Image (tube, rainbow, N blue to C red; front, side):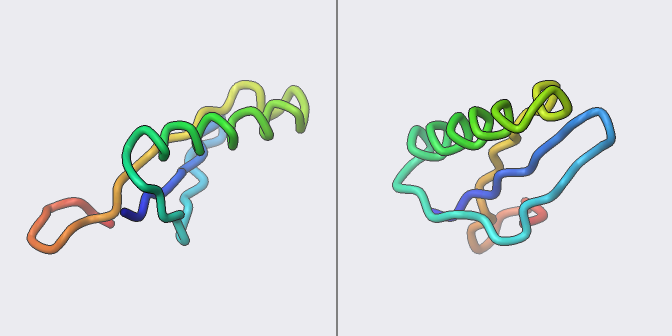
Length: 65
């Protein structure tokens, strides 16, 4: 299933327009943790950020993706 990994910081939302295929929700959360770890390495600016994991919409759902 495709998941989107939006980054949120004090300036607002940086949407992920591409997403990533993950086997399940647990794999998506692991991927989000990896992204957060890499952001933290980028310095103080990104340490206040978080990664929002959003599943892609499935046919018939009301999700915006």
